[in-house]
Image (cartoon, rainbow, N blue to C red):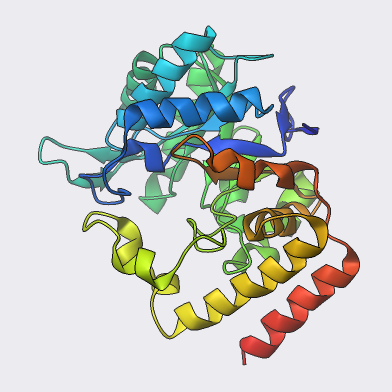
Length: 324
């Protein structure tokens, strides 16, 4: 699988990474409903066997469960790093109490405590890319980033990353310590970063690892109204506006266009959606969530798939016509 250098680091990452949000399971504010850990671990192994060389998780996913599941998979493969041992990226800033309710903190002591807890759960000596999950509270961004830089100096973090930051927020922390990567949402349905965030990253040499390139499953080609109606009660997507009218009909029409384009190239709609995100040279990689063995087959081919200009133009025409 093709690899690209991530920002200012020496990490050569594959164009697709394994997203571990969903495998955190349900029972928390942004859960995906019940998940089978054995299936999750099998999905991780399947992706790594196919060539994927990085995993993106977060402490808050499943309130620690995702990191623990990733650790189990890592133990079976011998740790993290190069070759068959994937790089591990995780995040801080979203915390929880005994009541399982989430709160936000970027206080220095909180960031350090979170980092230490993630190191224990993951069973690694250093986190390859440690990211501020959300820039909240905004007033604490500088304090949190300064503490992350200290953790980097101590060897507990290899590189620093941000997630969901604006260009202005990136500039604020860049003045303290270099940013290796930004993790923003980016898909055919979420293009807000194109006007200023992507240009800032390009000008600053910041790598971009896009999350939700298939809009949390909506653009895979396997999502139906029936599946959406049957989501578990604790699946966060029940409240996602893209899964509801009036947007849902238009979004499913987009999926049919992606299906038509994919059929010309022997690709799935999901692979077309991911390839669209990867078309931009500023984007280093895309995070793809997998929960069960067998799912990798319909998405990982996007890593080496390039959409012809004619297909890109067709997608843009659809976007322009249906956004009126």
